Image (tube, rainbow, N blue to C red; front, side, top):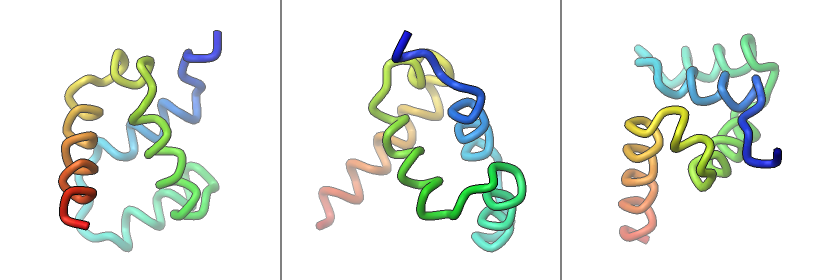
Amino acid sequence: MEDELTDRDRAVLALEARPWPSPGAKEAAIRAQLDLAPVRYYQLLNGLLDRQAALAHDPLLVNRLRRLREQRRARR
């Protein structure tokens, strides 16, 4: 099924849910754990926020990130 989360999708959400001491630590983890450039990671994450499967997987995280995204868009 198209809207099922892949292992990588779940890993992106799990990484995003973690607290980070600094942006540099998060970017290093993105590269080391997911083998992704940070830009690609954020592209994937943004796409996940629009998927029902991601919302079902971690509703608190996805709803919080959706609110933050909408706040950023409203400021533009």
